Length: 193
Image (tube, rainbow, N blue to C red; front, side, top):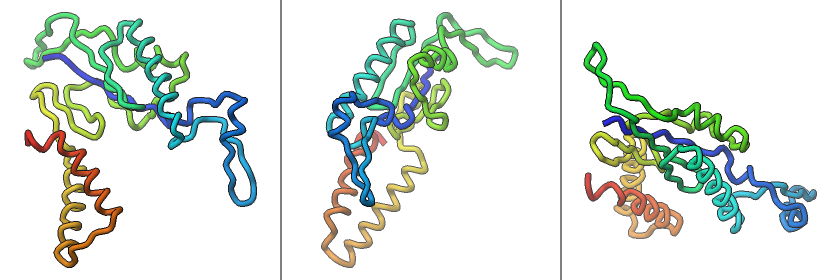
């Protein structure tokens, strides 16, 4: 097949976008009798997502201009795909190797002047199987699944809720919202197994 994807995550994405100086007076935080001015957009601020999204969109436009494409993103998570430039070369062990136009170091070099702080532990090199948005993607088998650790975590959470409901027909709003969010999330992969 030869098609591969790398995943990259911007470290503290919302803390990397500076606030325009005249607007800093609106982002004052009070703590322990003192007041602090926030110099970067805080996570949770209504407009922060849009501002951070513009930065991410501009980054993708720059990478596209450098022939690093296609790229999918959701907020600060990026999946960058690459395709072989020619047919595979058969190695002595029977494996195929391919040539590509770019690699992960190319992406890091291209974005270094932009000051994008890629998270060192949340970036994964190009492969045919990768985790993106919490799902395990397999390009060879064209499948999407929950990683085993997440599947077991969600199963334990669901079993705890069911056990709790067997004792009492009531559940807290927080638990109901939590289980609803979890089930809404997994419905993307469960119908197809």
